[in-house]
Amino acid sequence: MKINLVRLSNSLDPNVTFKKEDDQFISDLNNELFDYDIELVEGDKDNQYSIVFIETGGSEQHFVKIEKDLPRPIILLSTCKNNSLPACFEIKTYLANKEEDSIILFGNEKELADSINNISKLLSARHYIEGASLGIIGKPSDWLIASTVDKDEVKKKFNINLIDISTKELKEEIDKGIIDNIPRLSTINKLGKGNEYLDGALKIYSGIKRIVEKYNLKGFTIRCFDLIEEYKNTSCLALAMLNDEGIIGTCEGDVPSMLTMFFVKAVSDKTSFQANPSKIDLKTGNILFAHCTVPLNMVSNINFMTHFESGLGIGIRGDLSERDVSIVKLTPKLDRALFMSGKIVYNPKLSNYCRTQIEVKFEEDEGIYNLMREDFGNHVIVVYGNIINEFLNLLHFYNQKK
Image 1 (cartoon, rainbow, N blue to C red):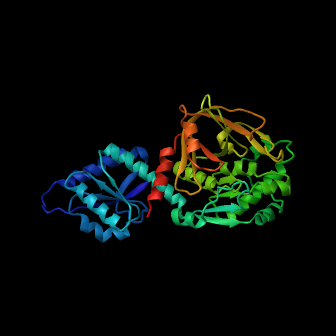
Image 2: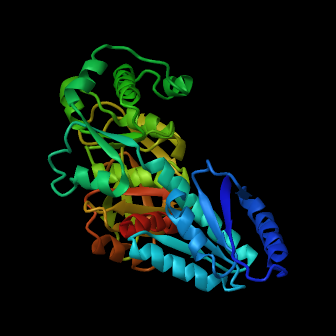
Image 3: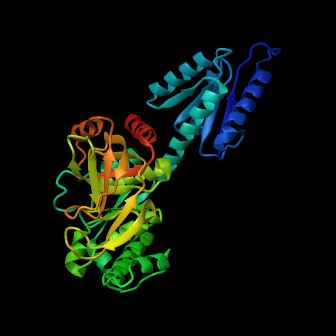
């Protein structure tokens, strides 16, 4: 990634040597940034990302002349020499008076490279999120009595377009009976060999995929239980396949889960798993999470079973790797999030739970405490690795955004 570097200075002494020192500073900083595949480049005015290097005090008026043309948020870089830092604070206050956010970066070259890398992830996530369209196919399921969101607030806060799409329109696509080109079709056919529901499940997949393409969606949520009544089949396989392809999909019309999975994708480029917190062991502190729609690329030993509640269609059972995971979920008001870090210790195969099941161990009672503290609805999002800091940084940015 290349980031435009804007340099501002105001020297009263034409013989000062700061310019040469600052040239070396930027060169050393770029050497540290090399490991992150980031480079600061002067004069790249078309770049959507910029860092303003305040080299000296007295640069404030130069900043005022150019600030309207700078991308937001404004990032200020200081060497903490030549009155660079106090000038950054003056500029930061100037922007705050205009109700605009800014960030001041300072430290040694290694510390700055780490900060710039973290900020670049945040900026990339914002670029992925803002202006995106996400579909709501049908209304949220009747039992999601607390998981609705204010669409206008989503647009205002995140610049995300939530598009209502009727179940009728989806059924019209499914009723065409067309199975489109399918990635990894040979694998799907092998897993579903002899399964009476496979043909219908692939028609549901194809119908949803055409809806996604029609509305240029980066993700969607679907009122999936209506399909059971109509087709005696489910969208579980479609969701497992589409998430595998990088198209965010959640079931039951759960919009907060869709937004959470979309944010996870934005900050980490990772696939995630929508699951129910289904059982808590007070003795061990372990929590069982389960659902039927796990993305295919998150599991091994995949088995096409039926959907748990209905006994129809295809529900996915698979084993997740026994490693560290993050558990996150936006609350319906979108101003807070559930967040927990744990480790998968077991893949149960219990008969009275949804098909893919994981037992996650948390430090002492941390998991239970966090789960009970936040009001997040009936689903959580599971992702491999620790992405909590990135997720919370993104949420913090949007909560601070004027």
